[in-house]
Image (cartoon, rainbow, N blue to C red; front, side):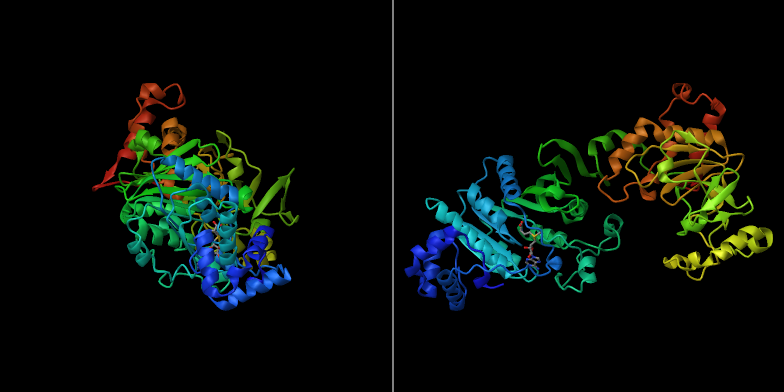
Length: 583
Ligand SMILES: C[S@@+](CC[C@H](N)C(=O)[O-])C[C@H]1O[C@@H](n2cnc3c(N)ncnc32)[C@H](O)[C@@H]1O
């Protein structure tokens, strides 16, 4: 789009027509517009000015269809959200007098306008944007604003057409160090892998910006949002300016920024995250927020989370000593059980072939997901629980059953042919479904291979939790007619040979102290918030030691004192200097 295709309001038309004489040459027009709205070099070339004159004369207003802007993570902030965001920052610190605004990817200029309209003290404004049509939109909006508000003092404004990744923020920061600065904006919402999938190069040149330990653990697989890169670039260059930083950004990015603050030590304090409704604001379903920090203060490592609309506080998350937690107050109260679990948490059976491997009982016969009658021996058939079955306190019943073809990962499955001919015939008949499994884990493995199986799968008593839901409710899973029940790969569990051990573990896990600990360490925004890593942080021995046997007697009436003490011994056993890990 060039200037000729710009949508200009009638007010701007009238203004330009009325002041037509000032638009005769480039120098004059730029001088006039600087006086009218503060923008330096409104037009870069005489051609641009010619285009505008043509536009005015012919009253053209051609709107072209927008090109595909996916690679630019283009979600323009609406006027109201930008106004409210600036308003909130001003309310955080009524004494601050901003004289400088930087918007690193200013788009159509909502934040610049929100700042100009609410901050009277501004002396300088810089906006950067890669997309020329948006530069025009921003410039004309600013012009319109000053036409409507001629009495307002005009700061010096530069709207720069540039790629943010090539822009010299270090130079800009050095030149403007004495200004009370507001860096505000909404950087692109796009990740490097999304850019990869559309062959885009809208990336920083040196994208090795996250090579330190711990990052993969938090974000997974080095995938990063380019908004995160821009936020880091800004904080690196501007955190020793006096002022504030405010970015509309994905929650996942904020989680990483705070995590990295431990070693970045940016001079930021009063860190806040105000959750927005991105469906309402941007018509996308991404958890996002306004992330705020006061600049040039002793570094802080925690962040208060609030609701953007009600300002209701949700939590304070971040670093507590060496732990990165979602609720610092809960963690303070329940961190006495932080450690390493003595029981290994496992994920359930994975087979990626549910149509064949999962069956249901109808009276005295089985049917599979392909609606085929299934006639097989009983031995390899086990009850199966899924996440949705784990809402109860305890269970020994199930809706579905599954075929367990191996006792250990990689076990040869030839024995099925010999020992269970009907099961083999059924599996062989449906072999195509197994061969079509996409995941590389099945490549080169025995026919009908499954994963998430081991001795622990066949232990009779289990304590399980859903990995799909946010709830940390644990279910005691008992065998049915002496046969252990399996869990699918959406569940996590620990397993036991003795019922009292399972009962005690189940009791301890559902106790409010453990629940508080889990609430403290689980970030609910994550796609899968309950993970093996999280569960492995519960030290059962420390947890057990918090209880006096007399106080638990009522809740654990089927467990004797000897069994209770045996659990203490089991979890307290040491091997060398290490606490032993069981099962
Ligand atoms: C999420 S939008 C937000 C725009 C504006 N900050 C706002 O709040 O409405 C991101 C903006 O970044 C711009 N952008 C994307 N990549 C850029 C780059 N490499 N350099 C400068 N701007 C870029 C897009 O064109 C888009 O206008």
